[in-house]
Amino acid sequence: MILILILILLQLIVFIYMYRKIGRFMKFNENVTSVKTLQEINLSTFTGAVLFVDLSIDPTLYSECKDILYQLTNLNCKYYVLDFSEVLTDYIDILSDLNVDTLPSLIVVNNGKRISQFTLPVPNIQNLLDVLGEGHRND
Amino acid sequence: MINMDIILIILRGYICFVFFKSSLVKFKNPYGFMIITEQYKVFPKPILRTIAAVIVTIEISIVIWILVPAFHFLGSIIGIMLQVVFILLLLKNLGRTMERGCGCFQINAPKRITLLHVLFNIKLLIIFFALLFFK
Figure 1: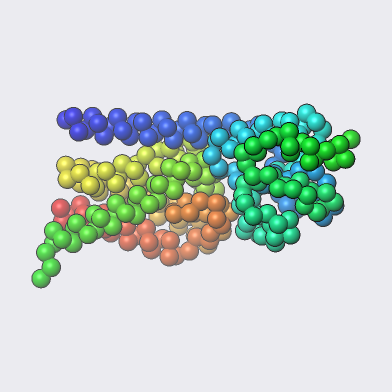
Figure 2: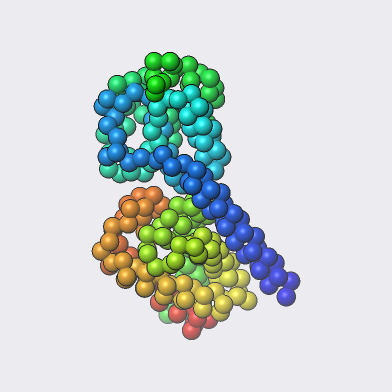
């Protein structure tokens, strides 16, 4: 009897944990509306930041992504968010072109050429904003 | 002649391994699994979150039920029901390429649903029946 109760309790805990974890991701995805596919952008002439994310990664990384996007938006910086599962499967060349060695990561691009790469979580956001600089702003 | 008990132990071990491996992937990436569930276009959107959480919970539970002798019967019955659902889902989407995978052991890698996937699940279904009837 005790064993049954323990098992039921265990199942309930697993279910609630999973349900809540999925909910956290759903909430994030509702907020990030700027996820693009590669067909929608032209990276060869793009200047700004490209954030490669997996739409199912850890929520802590998601909040990190959210913070970065928020700051980029506030500074009026141009950015793209790309789902890297699509990049990995269909556009793997783009990673070698941009010399991306870690995913998820944020790449600062000037006219399609990579300037710098930041792994997530970005340890020093100010450093990233400095690299993006005035010249890469979208105004 | 090989002892039937040994065969059943091996089959239980195999089922536990398969379900543990499968549930671990989903446990780590539940949102990815929910998106995969959505791709099957069977469940209504509002209940997808619940369905995904229930499936992962059941898969983990099956590992425990199959391991604990008192729950072998329950584990086999639930396993049969789950496999029937999986087989029907796979048959409905046979030949389709799932953008984010079929949800078997990989998430976020495109996969085409083939007859092999169906046969693999039928094999698991047969093992569950064997565990049920030869306990």
